Length: 324
Image (spheres, rainbow, N blue to C red):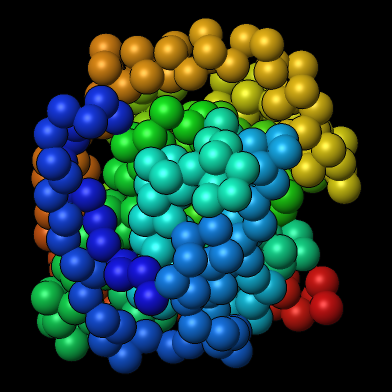
C-alpha cells in the first residue's frame, strides 16, 4: 500500500537532491465522507483509493484523478491522505514509466465526481469544534496536512508534469485554494468559486493569498479575498484566474481539446511552468508561516463568528439537498 507521504522541501524537479518527507497524521475525529472503497493498490499504475478515482491514459499521457461522489464534498483528513497517495503514485510512475509500454505522463487533471460541486473546502464544523474546545493542536495538524497537499500540487509533485484543475461546479474556500495550486484551471461556465472566510471574520490560510498574488497580483488578490464574494467562472476568466472557460457539461472535452491543441508545444509549456516555479516559487516555509497566522486568527474567533461559520455549513448542505 502506498504511504501517505508529503514532500516538505522546495526543490524543483531536477533529481539533484533527495526529498524530505513528513507523514500526514491520522484523522482526529473527523466525520467520514462517502463509503470507503477498496484499499490502495501497491501498483501505482492501478491505484484504488476510497475517496479518489484514478484513471491513467497512457495513450494521451494523462493522469486523471477525480474526487469520488460524496454527500459531504469537503476536505477531510481522509481525502488529504488519498491526495498524498495520488501524488506519490505520480512520482513513481514518472520515475519508472508504464511497466509494459515504458511511457511517461505529460498531464495531470484533478476533478470531482460530485454533481455541481468541485469541493466546498475546509471542514468548518471541525474548525468550530476545535476552536470551542481550544484544540489548537488538532486544528494545526489538519491545516498543515492541507498545505502539504497544495504545496505538492504547486510543485507539480516535483515532476515535469503540467497540472490542471477541472472545475465543474462550486469550488469554495479550501476547494478553491486546491484548484489554484495547479498550473491551469479549466472551469465550466456555471461553476462558482470564492473565498467566503472573511464573512465569519477569518481569511483563507491554506495558499489562496500565495497563489492568487502570483497569478493576478497582490492588489487584485487582496480585493478578491477581502470581498468574500463568490464569483462565476466567467468573471474569474476575465480576471485571469480561470485559464480555460468551457461550456457546461463539456469540461472534460475542453481539457482534452486544450491538450490536443497544445501537444506540439508541450515541451515549451512544460519549460515555462518549471521556469515560473523557479522565478517566483511558492515556498513551503511561506505556506507554513501563513497557516500559523491563520491558526492564531482562527483561535481568536468568538461564538458569533462560529455561528456564522455553522450557518454557511447549513447553507451548503441545503444546496446539496436541492440538487438531489
